[in-house]
Length: 504
Image (tube, rainbow, N blue to C red; front, top):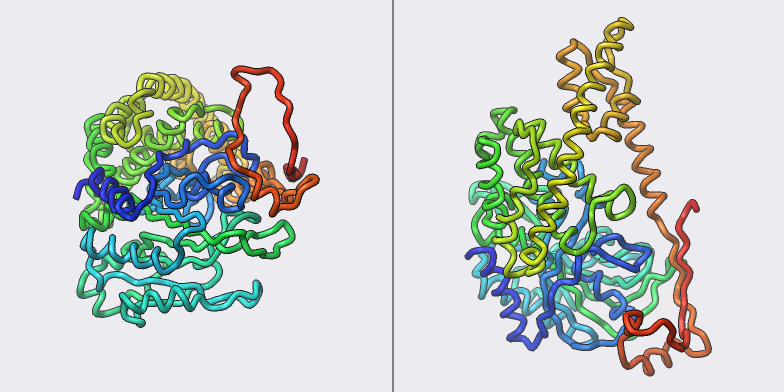
């Protein structure tokens, strides 16, 4: 099943279950101090979950474009090294806003995976929330009892708060979840070691494909949990992982979600993508990693620009610039691409995904222009950086030292975008090594500064002259932006909350 059909089959299935199909929200978030990008399928709906926005449709399904560059298993510097994590990804989701709950969500998930997509039932495991004494939450008996109707109890695993209680952040809507995992190992391996022992243990062939979250609570600023006004369902199925499973691949990058992009990168570089040679040939491994990085990052950059976020030196724009420069570095270092090349992949991406996301086609020329200008500028920086690293190595040798200072290695990374392995490679040409311990120290300090700069304390909503329950009853329409037509508008503030940027 081709990727575009996988996506459409999901949407058609939930349309048959009376869900309204909605387009993806922009990946770039504007006007929310707690988020730069939509990092999950539920992020655009969080005010509905909290009861702060009206429910237009009780049942919704969509595919949401998401961006994650930090967090569990997904530090930016690791993307491309493995075969199943990404910066930009699609999250297929079906949503119930105060309508159906656990039984329906689980039943339909099983029906779609096993009867429509025809996934082998014997390769599936599920996890349910084991409860939390800390939060006074019990074992999710309802989810367990529902799953028992479809799957052997030996394949139903208990999950702890870390894995099976979903929270968007320090505050906000949250609840227990049940995950569905696929065991893609060979029959011989599965007979030797049970997949139950591989679930949530970072096995690249035993992966989570779907998470059904049951939104029942709101986490308050003081850490307490309160019941939401209504119970909701928030599901997220990783599109790239699902396609990989349905196409019988062991890597997301081997599916046709990424193969057209990798084919184009092969054409531009003259190198070949050979994952089967990766374990035995270091040079081929570097080529493969570079191609995965570029194929992943061109999606992130293009969708961000299409959503109106250009590369910049601060905020969301800095994230996009950093991702773009990481892709250029890998092309330069491992594929010998010495002139702008990323912008030349955009037409392939627009052709591949333009039907599902028409903004790519509409903004194609702008995306190409912006990326080409960024590439041209960074290549000049790379040339300056190469001269700088040569001078550092000469100075280190002249000083009769054998190790390049870690602070200088970090400055090359931070200012010129030089990855530590490239600096190490050049240093070895001068019979020098680098101080990795000191480099990592400075890198950790930078990450901590970055986290502190973007962290925010968000207080709970305060209602003015009206109770929360009254506000929910009287809120009968969405807030409209009228600034295009009017300079003034009389209104009434019914609630507010404080958002304080930490360390400022």
